[in-house]
Length: 164
Image 1 (cartoon, rainbow, N blue to C red):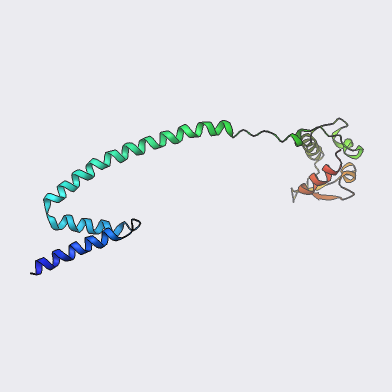
Image 2 (cartoon, rainbow, N blue to C red):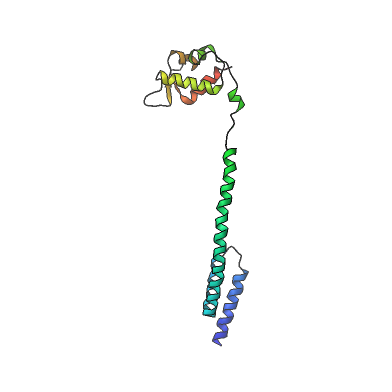
C-alpha cells in the first residue's frame, strides 16, 4: 500500500504542476525530471531522443535570426543621414560690430560661428586654464556687450543678437 500512496502523490504533484501558471518554469522542470527518473531507463532514452530532435531545430532558428538583423541594419544607415535645418542655413547679415570679426557678407549662422571660432583661435583668446572661457579683445567686447570674459555657451547667445 505504501507504493500506491507514493504513486498518487506523484500524480497529485503532476496535477499541481499543470495548474500552475506558465511563468514558473523551474518547478515544472523538476517534476518532469522526477517522473523520468521514477519510470526507469526506457523513459530517459526517449527523453534524450526528444531533446536531441529539438536541439538542432533551435540552432537552425538561431542562425536565421542574425541574418534578418543584418538585413534590417543596412536600410537604417541610409536613413541615419541628417538634413540640416533650413533655419540654420538661411543667410543672415551681421551687425557692424560683428562684421569687424567675421566680415560683411551675409552668411548662415553655422558659418558665423565657425568664423568667430577661427578669430578666437587665431588671436589665442581662449583662457589657458579654463578652455570654455573666451577672453574678449576690443572687437569681441563690442559683440559680447562690453564683457571681457564670456563662456563659449554665452558667446553664441551674444553672436545671435548681432545677426539680422
